[in-house]
Image (cartoon, rainbow, N blue to C red; front, side, top):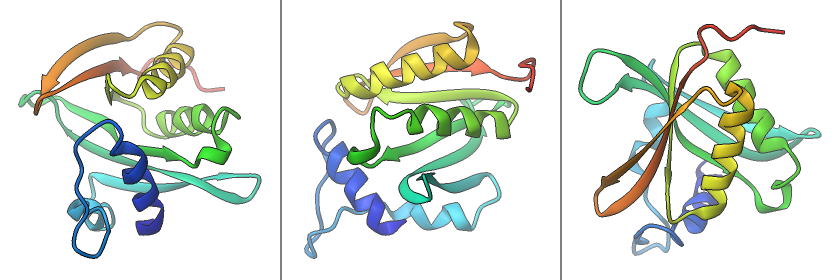
Length: 154
């Protein structure tokens, strides 16, 4: 996971300010908590039996209130596997696994990710989602909010 995370952060550094340490690595100190805290879950993404990426899920209070939401904290598909459906399938599988209220946050500067998440959420919800623009830490973000509590399972 740590090695894949370096590739992810390298890609993400195109859109947000990230620095490397004196060893030439991007730091993400909270990666270890995904194996330690009950409200966080790490998953690998596979395609045809090969490692293709990862998704990190967390559950937390939204906007400081008591409502708990699931959040795709980080999501990464290796470049060679993009545009083949593995990302959408993985997102939908994660949402099916965790019924509840969801938020997906994406920086507006990452136009391919904005397009991906808008399509993935729209397809999953049948268009029943709310989109919110947020400015945080000098970056513009889009938040996609939806619930899958009433979604029928196949």
